[in-house]
Length: 174
Image 1: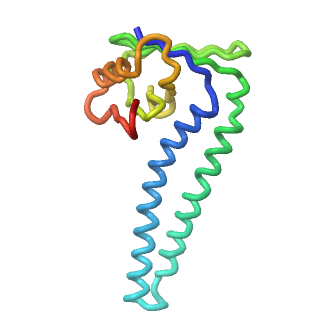
Image 2 (image 1 turned 30 degrees about the vertical axis):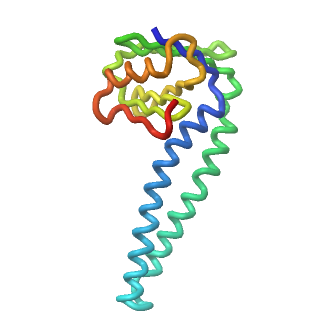
Image 3 (image 1 turned 90 degrees about the vertical axis):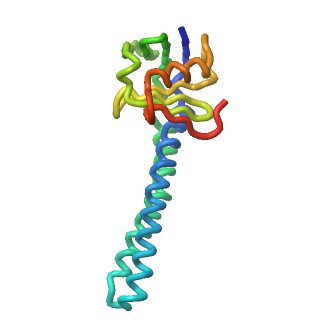
């Protein structure tokens, strides 16, 4: 059985937010490019009466979002009230189930046992595994916090549970 004990901290939350922000940045980068090119084409072929300025405005607005999102995400990770609760996550895996338990200093406790084959997806980065129980719940597994087992063993289990594109690896993995 693989076991991980990890303190819920700002670094883990920043890693999850950062991973999701990269995907948003790519999306908005494409959007900015499309609006800018449309604006240039409209200006060249339509003159000053064309809606080119609207396209450039949309490109500028998208660029503003790309700038504001990381600042907002950093503040969210730093000021999260959950960080003050001293939450510790106990996660374990066997060949069939994912067990997750969270406890806090004030007595809060949440426990779940999930068959591995019904997990939504899993993502591996250089320092973490992000295991999505559903679209709203993601368990953050730091690779440095394994008590028993190894990241390679967890990777093998997750790949057997999540076929195809439900398991993804990003960046240089250890």
